[in-house]
Image (cartoon, rainbow, N blue to C red; front, side, top):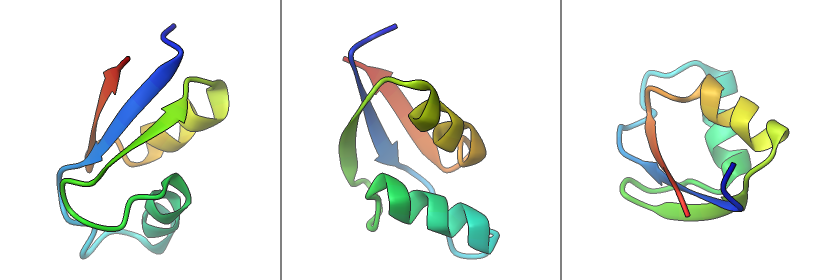
Length: 60
C-alpha cells in the first residue's frame, strides 16, 4: 500500500444519501474537483468505498 492517497471529488453529491454526504465532509471534500490527501489506512479505505462512485483515488 502507498503511504498517502489523493482523493478528488469528481461527481456532485447532490441527490446522494445523507450518510454519503457526511462521509465526504469527514474526508474534507466540499467542492467539485477539490483534492485532499489522507494517510492510507483501513478507515480511510472504508470511507472511500462508501463514496467510490463520487470520487477518484490516486496513490502517492
